[in-house]
Image 1 (cartoon, one colour):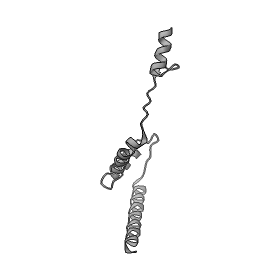
Image 2 (cartoon, one colour):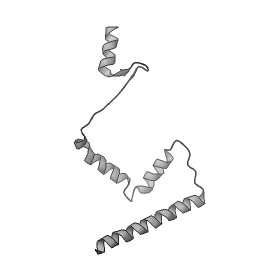
Image 3 (cartoon, one colour):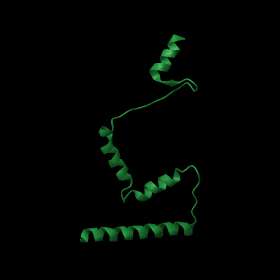
Image 4 (cartoon, one colour):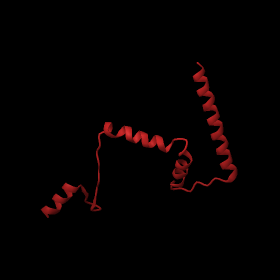
Length: 94
């Protein structure tokens, strides 16, 4: 009995399910730059379509867009990108 209690303590085993609970603690200043770079890469323009498709595909509920809905989304994205370019040009002109 003592061995089992010690095992629970050492390996942080959840007594209800008897599964090992894994926790990794890292210092933020050691990983934040790498994680920011990785996330930034995922949302870079050349990877954006793939990242969004992956995120939508991984949703637990099925997200179904008809062709008209998909075209509306593409039009809204194009409009947002055009507005962003205008804003960037305006900032550059000042």
